[in-house]
Length: 259
Image (tube, rainbow, N blue to C red; front, side):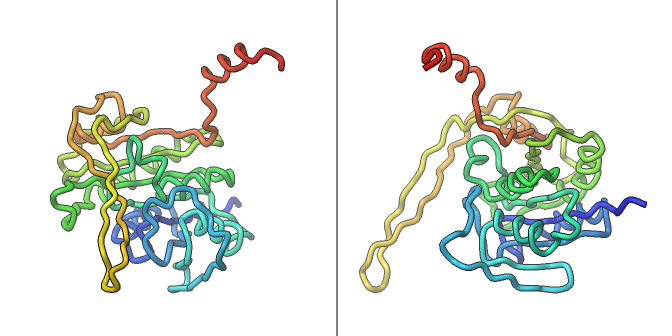
């Protein structure tokens, strides 16, 4: 008899994030064998970073919930290579992130990185994120993921996808009843975005800095993750772990010859 599907849930917003509860609910709609290994503190923007210059701490919250003093990548490694090494997960869900991960966000996202590490370990992995109104970020409506997430993830798992590929899912910033469907779309690009570095002064008169992204609303391409979210649809984007651009590779080969 085959073992039931074991699912590992992680995120980059931390062990106390409300989005983690949504991801666990989605996982439990597929299996009773669900484990949560998430960062002790928020790791937004951590990308696919790994903690190598400091020891990691593992704190058991309860029987199947653990907090790690590191990044989402650390969490997936600790879950798959330590806690669950005798029966590794068959699926990894990373999220649900507080904010969308579309366009250029993909390269910065710790949520994407959690799924990326699962993918690197040969485990089917899905990143899940919830868009919201930038002007009302304190009142995020998680209902789109709560309502549509279980069926969507089930359909994706049943369809399957190749090794070396992870799926990036983004729920639009609207109520569940206002979602206008699901779209399989490529990664887009922000047309209006700039990086800000804000300097402040602490009580000892020493400078410190905040790095942030300022986005101005543009008109995203319809056939993209940005366009799908803008249209009120759930976006599903397959991302390849291999970043080689083959068209340019052929050009380089032609330019360099056999040398």
